[in-house]
Amino acid sequence: MGLWDKIAGEFIDVIEWVDDSTDTLVYRFPTHNREIQMDSDLIVRETQQAIFVYQGQVADVFGPGHYKLKTENLPVLTTLQNWTRGFNAPFKSEVYFFNTRQFTDLRWGTPNPVTIRDPEFGVVRLRAFGIYAIRILDPRLVMAEISATSGHYRVSQIEDQLRKTIITRLSDFFGEADHPFLDYAANLNEFSSALHQALQADFARYGLGLESFFIENVSLPEAVEQAIDQRASMAAVGNLDAYTKFQVANSIPDAARNEGGLAAAGVGAGMGLGMGQLMAGAMGLGGQATTQPPAQPAAPAAQAQIMLRCLKCNELSPETAKFCANCGNPLRSD
Image 1 (spheres, rainbow, N blue to C red):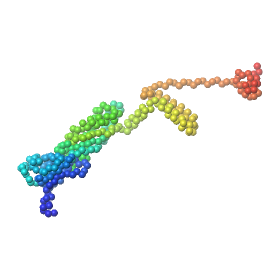
Image 2 (image 1 turned 90 degrees about the horizontal axis):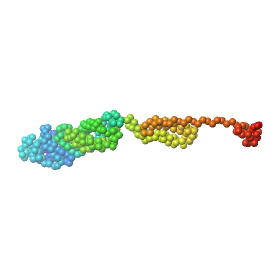
Image 3 (image 1 turned 90 degrees about the vertical axis):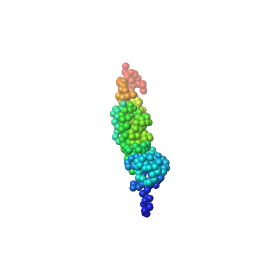
Image 4 (image 1 turned 180 degrees about the horizontal axis):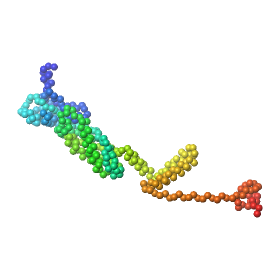
């Protein structure tokens, strides 16, 4: 490398940043041991802003555009370095690019259940998760609050702090909500909108805008969900006695084809009907207890009838008969 190439390499003629990442918030242009030439080109692309920093102080801020660097468009830096109008010597400054595009599909979730008091289930523990999107609104505030002098600051470096902020607001919101858990699914849009508004100020403190916020799901512990499923199943059954009879009736064809035939089905039907009546009596229709009428006593068995045997043809005839119905032989001597 010749002397001129070495000298030329120490000066910067073009300042620009082509973002080839997916989650970079702030990028520092490499200016270490190099000076920026006056009248050099500054290219700030759409969804970018550039900040010049001199000795730790934020100087001039540039939005999207193509600039020729002069004292006229570097008023703050000109003041900090005491330049005269028309100053044309190379100068030192740090240059930071801020990515102002929207960062979407960022995910949040409750690492631990949130305990709340529910009007129907009492004390329950909720879990929730969803997505949100952010963008840089104020580069100066982003630099002051989160990125500082980092040469490459990513979204992942602030995500944990943002998730904790979301969970704090979510816990407070659910704790004060008057809606029972069973109504949450029907109100997720309203909950998302309310929390979006509540979180705006929290994100703005970092220089960020919360572009969107959505709750995708709110769930209970598995044991509580199973109890809700059982409750729904009982409500779907309705009249337990009628349901049991229906089930037994459907089982008769299968029982007839099995060993024992319809006799087994009859025993099963009796047991099923008895159990259905017992449970229906204990639970009642609609969850209220009812009383079943006592079973009626069986009718007494008929008395055995006395019969007379014919001595001639050996056939039986009623006691009141005088002659055998089969052969006409007298049955009585009187």
